[in-house]
Image (cartoon, rainbow, N blue to C red; front, side):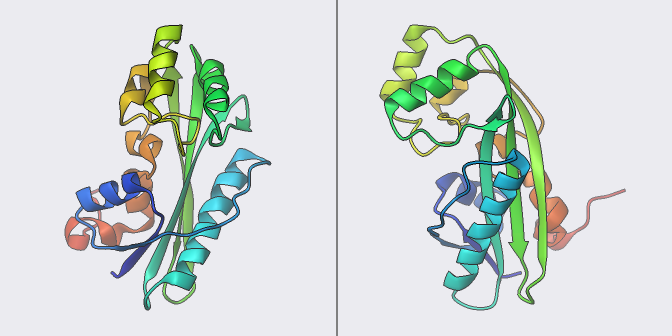
Length: 192
């Protein structure tokens, strides 16, 4: 399977590489939805990325578009544009549970689409000023859904994760292999 990842995300690249998937990555620039029902926002953003990736693909290939959104109280938090906005998001998440939605859209060579949404629940610790200050000073919050990166220093903020951890990082391995079982090592279907 020839695969093009429509993303500049190092995390998504790392996940695919860890699976042993051969792929080519193209950075896409799309106008993302920011408002609306969270499921619609995350799926449409992934679809827009996949379509933009189709335009940049070097040849016939399956194109993978993905989007991750942090949802609190039914509202997409989005990425913080400043340290002040990052602080606001982290304070809102402090001591609470939120949902992480991860959408995947695969556009096949023939124009067919396979898509789905993964859901994970994340519980944050109650954040004190020292922890907030340390995290904000790290700059890790930049360009991150919900202003945190669970696989980095952001792990200090998290009490527990329910569901697919890779979804919170940025690409659900479980959902990807459901949608594209040909990406499994050896292309094998799961037993059972």
